[in-house]
Image (cartoon, rainbow, N blue to C red; front, side, top):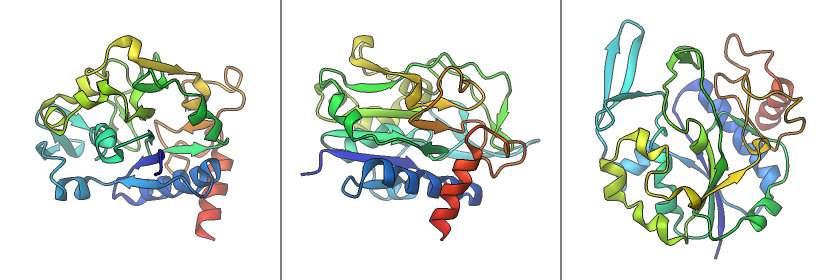
Length: 244
């Protein structure tokens, strides 16, 4: 039985598809050939009856926006909330979730082995307060408690507290509460060092010189204005490797 897996957020947008390709090809090298890597696709989750939250497309002066009705809030990606179904669909062991706009740079197998099973979730506990209201070429930059904690996290699917995160609870809980891990006690959330979710534009290479996972949270290097981001050259190298 496989007790480790990776789930990457998927959005059917041409530039985000490139990000997904980079995330997957770099993750395969970081994880080796045997750990399954899967895309977290909203359409499939809906087809399986796991995702019943009401989503609307609302037209604003800035263009169409996804709107999560339960949260009464915008969401910038299709996997903004579906990430919290990972413990349900992974079923057992440690399941790593990451947004698609990441670059895996270092092996992660020893990380899985070092995690304490008394913890329900592991993440980098960012104090991230973006100063802009837009990201990703116009997508909404929402503000909420514990922002970016859930953008890269290890779920302990065998932990009894994660069984509280039922499909029913998921589908009736506002996103801002899911993102703060509302079903867990604070001491059940383990802490990873910043190298496991290096936020471009927030962290510096002086603080974290050799990160395991680089997160282009405001825009990937194929987006206007982010071409010269730290680690952009590595990101393009992975995309070219995938294309070849």
